[in-house]
Image 1 (cartoon, rainbow, N blue to C red):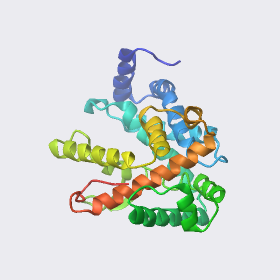
Image 2: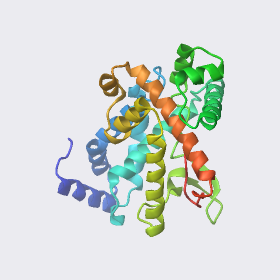
Image 3: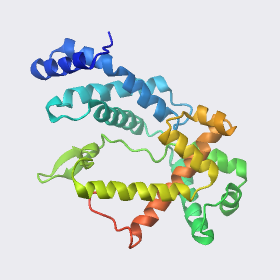
Length: 270
């Protein structure tokens, strides 16, 4: 049964840390299972419709189990944050193993990014869909179809193993290379600078793109809920979201190469 009281969950953690028994492990899995459904639903919104959410949940369960086995309560970290990263990594890693994004789709993503970069440099603003479609030599409906197809191209697995990392040339998971947010004043400064960059990039977008990003990432609306707010279909919201994320990635890449925003060691801009 699912547990509700924090002190009972804490008791389970200390018991599992001491005994590593199956019964306690199963109770922890049941308690934190809703995390898997939450992560799976968020990822499903940006994936092709042929990817079943139930499959994502089954992949994510393995990530949850791995997180429980690896988590050390003595370090004082919040398990939910750590587990969600592992769950997401497990889901994306499984999707990557099936090579679910065809080369043709990745080629379309590169062509759209190239066109976005060119138009933004020429006009000094976010291009409209009609301008983007004209640059690509296609009709607007075809552009919208392409945006739907490439909605999940940029995903990576946080559990992906990186060989040759570390002092002993050992493999480590990508998630283990992400700096701790409590590393000190340098990390706090970099985090503040990145937030300022993101805010600047989002503010430079069109009103619909800006609204979709704010509602999705800050208000935690689903794509369907956003569609009701702005009066379009869920698939159309997915297209707007994909275009906005591509624009933001281009903005961050450009900002990181400019002198006023030097790229720091250990800071990733995506």
